[in-house]
Length: 578
Image (cartoon, rainbow, N blue to C red):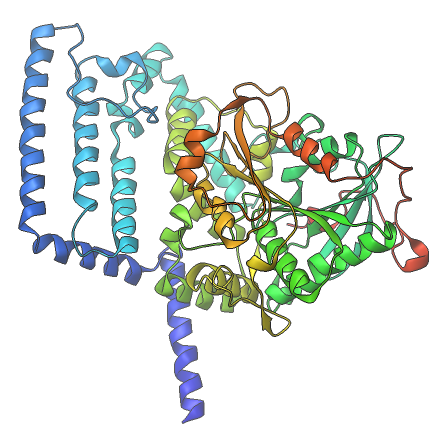
């Protein structure tokens, strides 16, 4: 019977893997459950149905009035019957105010309004299912937007007439080039101008430790003296580390070195089949703890400012809680950038995380041993389908204009993979079960509590983050009584962190909750914390300096006598693996 059970499980997993390949890794069952929940409850909600019918009648009346105004106005502009949302840039061009495109975009916006009302607020529908249905409706609407099609896009039509179709010829060439690059697994056009180690990830340093999971880079000092406490940076392994070391002008690592700090940074290996069985425990031991041990050997008898970004910050929070539990006092402070520690409200990424979806991903990962980078990128692309997909297609294929490549876009296209075991544990322990915030996450066979952390902590959230919403990041305030300085910066998950001084249109809020002080809810914090212009980087440096000693002579690169011999120049070898 046991063998039959194993065979049955293997057959089911194989079937789910085949299904995943055919459905772009999206679980049809998850979508069907969400739709059934929504549709059945809507069918038994006469009040909601009446509300939607009333809305449809109001919209029809408004549209009829708008059409009448359009006919009377002739070539002039009629008053809109529905305002375009401020954040929606699709219909900003003046051509959309002319007949018949004004009618097309008004009909689209009315449809969008109706479906938003229809998919929200239906009594009895599970919140996750409501979000999934609303997201699916938004995806269909985005796809059908009149701006995405040549014959209903006045900008594209005007360009086509003005250029005698040359824009479409360029667009076709761009499309064919993109297809060719995709099939050949080449980076997007323009990315060749950002070579790793030359144009990006170019801060001087040496790899001083290498194991099967990561390389540890120690950066060369650029000041005559440095603060005695080194900084250890733990980036997320869902991305290449050099998001924190982009071009010289916007490299956070270079900036940190220039402010008189000895900086170490982990560069994670891009995992393949051989790393399929590496889990969260290995990332903790062979990643964070191995790096911390090396830093302690190279800069002995000094506490360490530990800094984690995204998933690296979550790992750092786990490590800090375990160290506090065990009486390990080697850390001087914590800095957590867009790092979630409570996953009860993970934001739009939670749309792709439920039992059905995770089960499908596990079956798919079991086949290859890892989750491919393009599979992860596809999920993120769907979250921002207009910015990352449709607007790109309109600009490059209809208007014929290639989007200029920049360092952040080139980095974003430099994809990584996720080991099967680790990714499964990450999704189940943190997202589905929320073990970390609820005191169940095990380290060394015993659970850890974030409430044990007593280190001063600097946390950063970004205002428009789709991956780690700032209110979710803010939840650290009620998970630990320690002193927390929280900075909320403009921008998204990546662009909000890469926010160098002097960059225009940047702002942030910052405030400190003293250790043991009363909890302030996030929206109240937002109201009472003033906006400051500029980059949050100097504020973080000032915070670090308050917790750092008098500058001393820089330490040597590596410690050969202790087994940490400088091996090769930064950025190392792992970051170059594709």
